[in-house]
Length: 403
Image 1 (cartoon, rainbow, N blue to C red):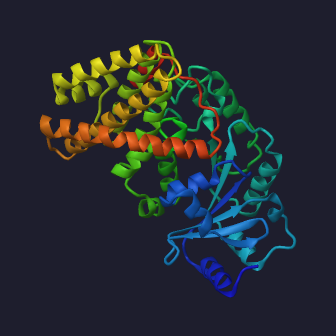
Image 2 (cartoon, one colour):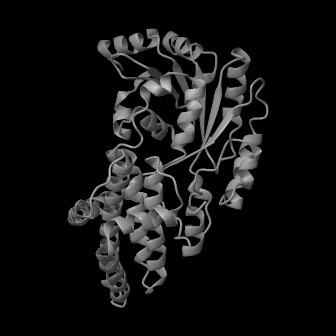
Image 3 (cartoon, one colour):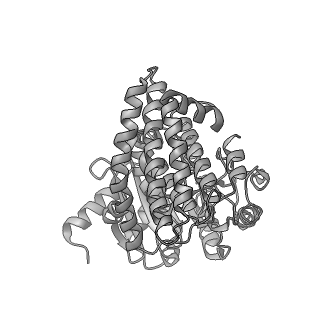
């Protein structure tokens, strides 16, 4: 039961003037991840911030004291019937400015959700509808990774985008056809893949920029007020450097000399390009990687090459060699990411860091990375993580980075 203070807070949130975003979707579809992206909060903070409205619905306002946006999360479809509802829930639902439907891309059993969406549109013909299609990596094949740059615009052409796996394209289209019953303005489809950094699926916020653009078009001004700078150092480490480092470590841990090493090297170059692009620096992976290596100097290149060769030799020591190589690869990738973040941030600001400063940054990051790797391993081992798609071939990875 809610205490009086919580009931008062929920009532105040219902009466607030901030727009209401109605979240509709099954458990584990990814609703919390989207709210965390919008608010910039951790998943557990989002969970603690909700206030119950009915047995199967809850309301969350952010920021809590002066809300800019309110989230009505319908966890169960029973709440969408027209009986036995609290006055607060009915008022919140009727105030909705946007219906955000969150569906896992491999789920086609959506009849109940489609029915609710159709009824919502019947009641409110002008209600905007965004459909987030989540968990893209669940339909990746053996050598598939996220297509870069993000290629989707929500049209039927999405299935023919370069780098989009056939199975994923077919699922996207089949799922979209289920919503053909919606009258009025067509819904906007946004494919997303938000993952935990320790899963090693990079970047961990795939599709976030497109989602923010759509949200800003739907609720002008609200997104601008809510959005934190996506290029902050902390966000870049969590959503780009950490997952790329985990992916490179997993790839290079393959107990076959050279094979995994080529893939991990390609991932490091892809990470550098990803960081540069987030910071507004143009160019393909070859130019951006070459630019960073050139800024670090020939000494770095020789050391990097020697380190790579040593890792491949260590793999001969099966059982212990691959574990050392994984830790070593993580540390090097993390350090490269830190240097790339430092270098391209300075470049975007019109500055040019000297070579000594870059090398110092690299050495410092290398020292710190080992502790980071142990912490991430502990977190990953503490919770069951879904299997990561197998590593791509070097040629397919680098080809995608060049587009």
